[in-house]
Image (cartoon, rainbow, N blue to C red; front, side, top):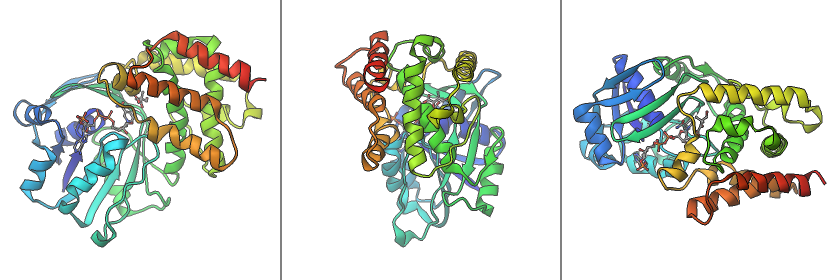
Amino acid sequence: MEITIIGSGAIGGVLGAYIARAGVNVVFCDIEQEHVNHIRYKGLRIEGPAEEFVVKGEAYTPEELIARNKQLDWVFICTKAHHAQQALDQVCQLINKDATIVSFQNGLIDLKVPVQKKVSEPLCCFVNFSADYLEPGRILYGGVSSVAIGEFNGTSTDRLKVLKNILEHWGPVKQTHNILGYLWSKLSYAALLYATALVDETMATVVDRKEFRPALIELCAETLEAAHVKNVNVHSFDVWRPELIFPRENQKQELLNAEFDRISTWMAKNKKQKSGIWRDIAIRRRKTEVDFDLVPILEIGRQHNLSFPLTKFVIERIKELEQGAKQMSWDNLMDLKKLYEDDVLR
Ligand SMILES: NC(=O)C1=CN([C@@H]2O[C@H](COP(=O)(O)OP(=O)(O)OC[C@H]3O[C@@H](n4cnc5c(N)ncnc54)[C@H](OP(=O)(O)O)[C@@H]3O)[C@@H](O)[C@H]2O)C=CC1
Ligand SMILES: CC(C)(CO)C(=O)C(=O)O
């Protein structure tokens, strides 16, 4: 068995390193030549909260992987959502009907393989552990958190069992009939993460600020309402309990405050202190995955005559931050709070 990781950054790098360290054949693939060279010649360093280790491995750019011309067996697509389809298309000629493709993206993506390839639909992996690509060959790993896998149609298959065994070289993995429930739940959590990235502060600091909580809770409720109209039964994970937020009429202030305290404490303990969204904007100066995370929520709202003003605001502000038209600041959260108080509460 050989696992090919397409996109060996934060998530792909951590998973690949643990799986390779356990003795499974892992082939790392990434578009960054310097990163590929590091993995190949010096090794990939994982800097976790409990341990640091280095794994040397076979590593290629997509072009080198194609030139190698070996059929791929297990293909983990670990790029950002907006690169995933292109990353898969690029290596498609190396994929035949026996291959298993697994998507690891946050957000709503629907990877397609040309039908003539007769490849089964991709498996899906929900990820909530955190990691950051620091520089070529170096990845910060925040520590163990939930990972769940499933077939999109909810069935239990042999290939899922095999995937579970592979991924458990990293840590505990839940096999679920409701992978969409996890993905949508993560989307509602991601709404919170996007809001924290409006400020140049740690996620824990933002979530700790009680004056912003009502607006943040309503922001997450908008995504959960979209999940509801799509008939998705959202699943809790780690400290995230969407059932406390939606349906809105079930909200209990005390429970929600305690929940947000718990989330803040949980975030403060993680080695990764700021979100991937913050990192994309502030450090890597590139686009976030907002088009795959929050933009589809607005679209679903439109289709169902639901307006999601806070989601719309966060999308617009994130895009302004991406373009450099606005700066990260508490003022952004003040504006969100004001919108909530003036337009939503009214
Ligand atoms: N990081 C985290 O803590 C978490 C991330 N996730 C999700 O996991 C997914 C991956 O994110 P993450 O690991 O953080 O992203 P990273 O940017 O750290 O890693 C993705 C890597 O893929 C590379 N890449 C882009 N296009 C291609 C291509 N065509 N072929 C090969 N490699 C390519 C990127 O290069 P380049 O940078 O040059 O584009 C990058 O090195 C995202 O959907 C994210 O939301 C989920 C939970 C937590
Ligand atoms: C913070 C984290 C890891 C979720 O826990 C995440 O998904 C991100 O950084 O985008």
